[in-house]
Image (cartoon, rainbow, N blue to C red; front, side, top):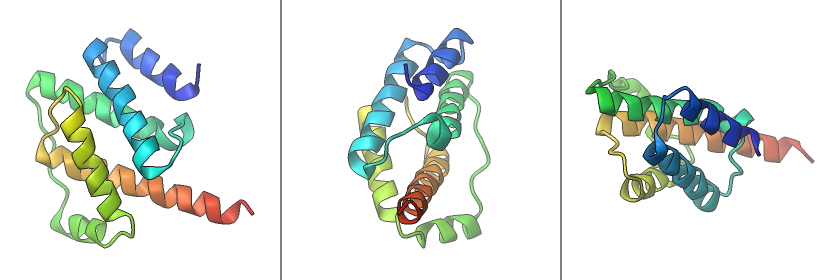
Length: 127
């Protein structure tokens, strides 16, 4: 079992996520790997997966988070990988069972941009 799968199993055993949530997390990982060409691991995606699990929990509890500031959103849109991250988020939202409120989407796009930026950095320095 991969370490990212161990995290998902841990989130399940702690009742942070249910079976539908687990399936959604697995779909999200697969979408990221296929569209962004990045292997999602504990090291690069553990925090992202936990954030999504918390999002699912907030949905169930009727809770919300504060939106990203306009300044951060502007910086986010200037990221090289923003368009791919946005398209990936649209695919995720259209594929998974759980709804993803607009305010949460910007956070997830931010995570995706960070994941891709870090992957590019590792790829370019591992010669």
